[in-house]
Structures are given as structure tokens and as C-alpha cells.
Amino acid sequence: MNLRECEILIKSLEAEKAKIENVNTEYYDELDAQIKRIQKETYSNLSAWDRVYLARHADRPKAQDYIDLLFDNFYELHGDRGVKDDRALIGGIAYFNGTPVTILAQAKGKTTKENIERNFGMMNPEGYRKALRLAKQAEKFGRPIINIVDTSGAFPGKEAEERGQAEAIAKCLYTFSNLRVPIISIVISEGGSGGALALSVADRIAMLENAIYSILSPEGFASILWKDESRAQEAAEVMKLTSYDLLGKKVIDAIIKEPLGGAQECIEYVAENMKKYIEEELAVLSKMRMKDMLEKRYMKFRKIGMI
Amino acid sequence: MENLFKKRQERLDIFHSLRKKVVHENIKKEIPDNVFKTCDKCNESLPYIDLVNNLYVCERCGHHIKISGRERIRQLFDENTFKEFDKHISSKNDDHFAGYDEKLDKYKRSTGLEEAVICGVAKIDNHKVAIAIMDSNFMMGSMGQVVGEKITRVIEYAMKKKLPLIISSTSGGARMQEGIISLMQMAKTSSALKRYSDQGGFYISLLTNPTTGGVSASFAMLGDIIIAEPDALVGFAGKRVIEKTINEVLPKGFQRSEFLLEKGFVDMVVERKDLRKTLSDLIAFHVGK
Image 1 (tube, each protein chain N blue to C red):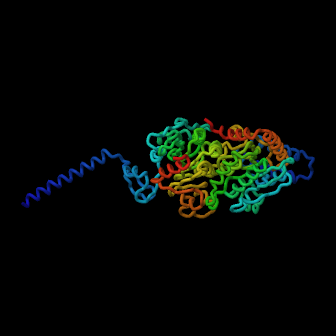
Image 2 (cartoon, rainbow over the protein chains, first blue to last red):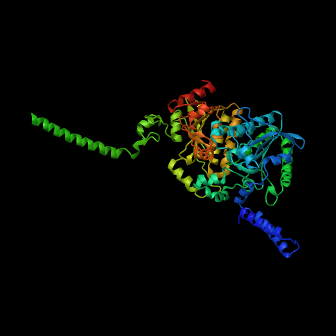
Image 3 (cartoon, one colour):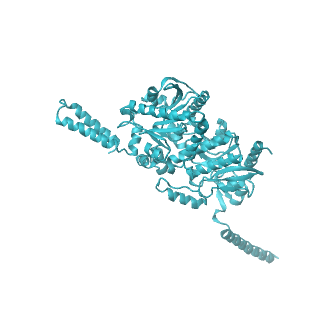
């Protein structure tokens, strides 16, 4: 039984439970126990595809939710000063525990309307150039940068190509690699391809427990390698895209715990864990000598696939 | 008299028929099947010997035919000056991806290469340069950990020895079979280029057909000067993906070199016959004659 089927089953059991008027019956307790047992069994043994499902869950908290919970006095700053403002990226400044920071957050919407405005979290070149502008501004004023990553990929559109999607992403990798302020990136749901990597060249990279991070979406992967998009589930299992896989490969530094059932079950719990992580790592990074921090950041990527 | 002419004609006929036969047999015997190559654009049959002299550019339509990394080195650099680095490192199938080992073996045999990039140093009009030349015959020039590692090493070498750097790209993008590790090579190569650049290194990126995906979104687009061969496909997303996303057919010439020149993403489009001189001149500008 995959997670989706399990969710449907639990919903039906809960509906049945709700129908019972007298909560003191044995049947009620039995139903309750059954739901708990199914939840525990399923959530403590998630397949990669289950995590893909959770990472894309409609109710899963979005970047804006975490911005609201983690930071104070947030001011959004718009535009790349060239073409326009890309709403798939929220950029701005705020306080984190009293320290000014720059926030760059890939934003999916909560409703269809908002998703259309935000292009489903798929950035255009001007979004990456807005990120570059704000990152350089952060460097100028010595503000640490917190990146929130949540995108299925950079937008594969006609105008995106005309305005240099490849160049914009390449410039992000290039510039972030040597930016003279601490950078922490957290993949909250989907980290897809170069579009996610552009905001993931950082001193620390963490993933929420049920987030995914991969070279391509499982659908795209199956389509390219097996010419069959419907084999996405199979692709997810071989792609090593879960937080645990990537921690094992040392591509990420930490996993931020989620409650049983996923982040949507208790966002405060996730935000608290994220806060703790950022707090601890910023403390470490801000004590380091700039030269050492940059050398470590360089080596972090230099070592991946080193022969 | 009449007879004489007749006899002569007869003898001539015999001679001609024999000659035809001989020529025919000779062709069959001495010249291999691949004496002609068909231009993949205009379908003209081009004799190999002319093609080599013409740098693999179609004489009829001017199409720049795909060439191997070795041929690229022959065309661009001074004879016998190329020294190869890291020739023997080859990819491993760390994730035990089904069918990947066989694929690697197949391409190793068909290309005689260990991986999709050839790195080293060479001279161009006596100027020493660090070079990385990709070869799309090897798994579409896709970038896995070995390609990323070899390119990073040659960038670091250029930095250490204060040499100019030329990278000739041709790639379908990151190598799917190596998953996230391939993706990370984009960050690795770009970080190395940033360091090289900060120390004053001069990097020319040459874009050849095709340069897309993870390679275009990393080192290929980071040159101090970016040159493209005519009509090369250069872009981030594939044509099919874009058409599916926007639900319309893309115009002719979309994502081609001339399109990128017009949009401001390459410095120049240079024909193959002028490439060597252009590169040599640009290097000379930056290292002094």
C-alpha cells in the first residue's frame, strides 16, 4: 500500500469514526487503534515514491509559511532591475533572532490562482538575476543569506531561453561559490535540477525529512532514460532523491525532522527545528575566518565525485 | 581505311571497358565503404578526403558537421603540442544503475575514449593553453563525475600555472545515470572557474553543436569570451520540453548560435575555418605577443 492509498483508507476510517455517536463503544476504540496502527506502519517505512508524494502534497507548507514563522520584520524586495519581478522567488530582508539576514525563497502558491501568479515555483532568468542582485547586496552589508529551496525546476519556457536561463543559473553557481557571507540553504519540498542547485551553493545545505532533491523530476528521468513517463515511481526508487540518501552521499549536511505524516501535520514543529538548525549553524559560520569559510565551501563541492 | 577506323574503335572500346573494370575493382578493393559522408543537413555525399581538408564543413551548404574531440584538437592546436591529462580515469557505476556499465563499455569501444572529455595542455601559435575538449560521441557528451572532475582539474591546473583556458563544449547535459552527483558537477566546475577568474585567469568558452542542459547552465556560459560555431544548438531546456510546456511550436532557428548572438548571450559566431586564428588572436590579446 503506498502513501496515497493509505491516506484514502485513513480518511474513510475517520469518516466512519465520526459517524459513531457513542464514543465509549469498543468499536470506536478499535477504529481509533486501527488508524494509529496504519499511520505508524506506513509513515515509519516510507518508500522514495511516498516521499515524492509528501514533498508535493497540496497541504504541504510553502516558503511564505516558513518566512512568517522564522523571521521578524520581513520586507520583501522586488525585481532584477533588468526585465521584471519574478514572483516565483520571494526575496527580502528580515531579522533572524535579531540579526539582519537576506532571504531568498522559491515560492509555490497555495491556491491555483496563487500558483499561476508564482508560475508554480518555476523561476525565469530574471528570478535568478534577482537572487544575484540581492545576494550581492547581502555581501555588501555583511548579511548572512538564508535560501529556501522549493522548485520542480527552472521554467522551461520560450522567453526563459531568450533571456538566457542557462547563463542565469550558471552565474548563480559561480557567484554564490565565493560570496563573502555565510549561506544556508534548506530544501523544504522539491529540489529539482539546476533550478534548485542555483540556490544551493552554500556553506550548509539541509533538507526537511520528506523533501526530495534530484537531477530531474522522476517523470522527466523516466521519460529521458526509458522513454516512458509513467515509470516515474520506479525512477524515484533508483534516483536516490530522499533526504536520507543524500545525507549518505554527503551532498547535504543535515536532515530537519518532520512530524509523523509530514510537515503539514504540524508546521510549528518543523519551523522550530529549522530555527534551531539555522541558529546553530549561523553561530558556527559567523565565528569562522572568511578565508576558511570560503575554502570549506569550495571543498564541499570540490570533493563530490573527486577521484 | 574504313577498316582501320573500325579496328581502332574496337580496340578503344576494349580498352575503355577494361579501364572501367579496373577502376571499378580498384574502388571496391582499396577504398573503404565510408569514402563518402552524407551531410546531415543537405544530404550531399561528401568525399572524406575533401571533408578533412575542409575541416568537416559541408562544401555545399556550409553545415558544420559534428567532429570528435581528437579532430577538434587537430584543427585548433599546433601539431604535436598536445599533452593529455587524466587520460585513464573512467566512470564507475556507484549507484549500480541498471545497464550503465554496458553503456559505458559500448562507448569506450566505439570512441576509443575513456570519457566524454579530453583535457590537457597544447599550444596555439606557440601560446601554451590549458584545454578541455568535449566529445559528443561518448554518451552524448553528458557530464558525470569524471567529466566534472577532469574539467575541474584542468581549471585548477590553468590557475596554478597561470595559463589561459579554452573549453570546447558539446553535451546533452548532466548524466542521468549518475544522478545527483552529476548535478553537483555543475557547482564544482563553476566554483573552480570563479576562483580562476578571481585570480585573473582568461577563459574562452567555445560552444559547439549541441550544448545544452547542465553544461550550458554551468561552465559553458561562464567564459570571459563566449564563441559559438554557426548553427549550433545552445540552450537550457530541450525543444520538446519547451514545446510541451508552452503548447506551441518553436520557430526555426530557436536556440541556435545566431539566435543567441542576437539575444546577447554569445560574443561571436565564428566559422570553423576562422576558429583557430580567432582563438589565437584572442589569447594573444590577453597574454601579450
